[in-house]
Image (cartoon, rainbow, N blue to C red):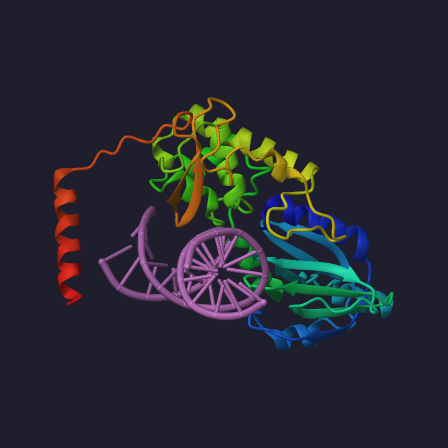
Length: 313
DNA sequence: CTCGATCCCTGGACGC
DNA sequence: TGCGTCCAGGGATCGA
């Protein structure tokens, strides 16, 4: 499942493989994961991909600025029009792949988009579950879309991390997964960094000590960098733009290790659902937060459950 | 503001 | 072998 390190790996591979290429034509098949399919068919043919960047879990295929190209072609003008940023956003979801292929390679199952390139190759997007997303955006709409997301976990400062985490009443696991808090962290790296920082996933941000918050930031960054170095985790069918799996899954300490011994203390790794996702942790190294439940609240809950049960009949 | 529930989707694991 | 069932999960959305 592509998270920050996996997306970074694919983006780097695509940067090396297709940056500078021109898109000749677009073929769409299933389009229910595309924001505006007609815009892609209309805007992309003829455009140069200048570079590929990662933004959170998105890849941005930046397109050559039209105005600059037009100005250069006409030998310049008296005014200098402001360049309008344009990009194709690609989110790989759970099972998305974006990779160049030779046209004689058979079309893989679930290939939904093909970009024919000016060197004869095809950039193909396949996605079995179609949890991914694709969108062509430009100008203010592109900027507005990117503004929805939080800090890049690799660059976030201690101060900003503390501001985004330390004052929140939500569970730390939910905060790490919330893309408007941090962009790029998913379930694997959330669990791995919480284990390393010895923080229980159900602890709230506000109940973490400043030292714990900073430890989490540092461990998260170290883990993400190491995972990028190993070209990501291949736990389902993740492969990079060249079809090669990553190696970081061999370094997972808790993810997918339910019932196995903690590498630190030997206790059995447990799995709970937090923020609607399975969360793997060590019950000894990552002690559960003390639940301070008021009597009033527990009564309320009982009452509500009872009324819900009766309303069913 | 935060929560859980629900939906989207398909392949793979598992039980019989 | 083949069927049914459950589960995985990122993100949007809704109601509490």
